[in-house]
Length: 182
Image (cartoon, rainbow, N blue to C red; front, top):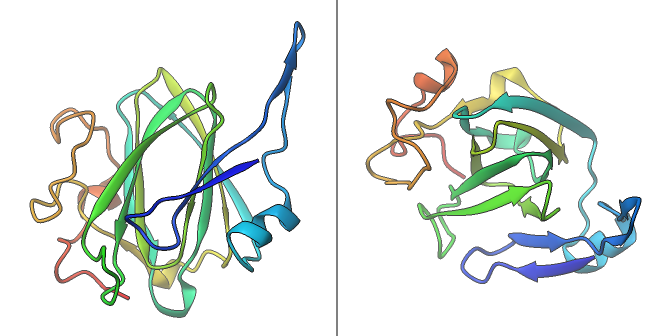
């Protein structure tokens, strides 16, 4: 596995897996605890989740507040997405900034998102199967959603707000300020 720090966002990593292929396909390790801890730090994942979404679906911007905050290791095993994170850590040099990266089954690239970030993604393929490990259990009372098309954040999504397919919960997301911050 190859680990690359994202210089502009402290604690964020891009991870590329070494694929070993032949005429049958390929094999790769998508997670290895000893390498992960050596490069990223002591993160203990306790839950893994998966979603399947169709083209045009936009999920997010989600996070859990307070003691229920979660670090995430995200990847796509089918299709492609544009993955977006927003730094909610008040003391961070990148506070209030966002970044996006395309994650796809074809590339196998993963993104590690530390605690203190909101996260969302938009599906750019026909369908996308999205998996993520988290280091804290889901806590419904701590769940928060920031509006994906918040004008303060001005995120460049691969679709307009009118084109995006969002859940009722995501459509009711709060503006960036005064969202619960870290």
